[in-house]
Figure 1 (cartoon, one colour):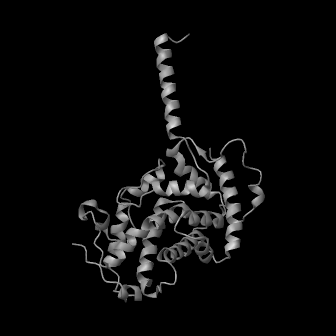
Figure 2: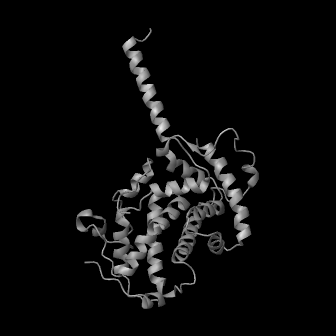
Figure 3: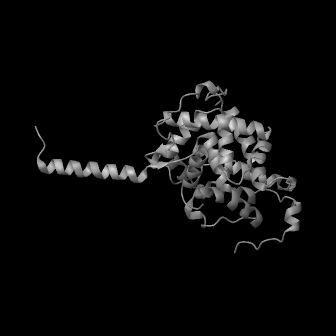
Length: 211
Length: 79
């Protein structure tokens, strides 16, 4: 959790680890200077620091793959944790903390996508697009070049309807049950199962196209 | 013009190295979830982000502690 963004050969990911300028509303000029900070962040609330340590990776990953941009994902993760800190008093423990954080993340990212008018990606789930698109001769998820995998996954997810993208990202987190995913996406467990089936098919079809 | 035997050997060696490299990196995934999990493991949160969040929080007014914070003992502060 302390290193630069890794495992991605794309230029976009390199950008995230560089000291790009941050919005002045969220950080001061000294905040981006490596010389000015020790290795460990100084949390005014150690409890919240522990929450960040435990969940930031998942929140960042969901933001990254949902938004498709490392810089926006970084900003989103920052804003999600800031919102979480402000609303911590409202958290009643009725759901898992991870679920609560995911809820904030999903709402935040959806708002961003609407704001940025990125709805052009694929707005409607047209399942006929994916039917019969998967080759049966070999495993469509066979990957030869792991180093390009991140870029292929991003392209694949970018080509899916937002709902499918979100469902796949949520169920990929092994801590999330179908019930929790259903709760987060405000639908029944049966609906989640049905849509996941179609989402998997769509992902595989899209993934093949990126080869 | 045919390549010299030395060049041919070099070319064959390079090709076999490339093939071996491709075999080493080839991997099969059984489901989209598995591929996403693998992807998630490769991604690291930018190190500067923790500092940025901590600094933003330091500027926030103190929040009231929730029930679970009151129930569980407070951890010791960072040195």
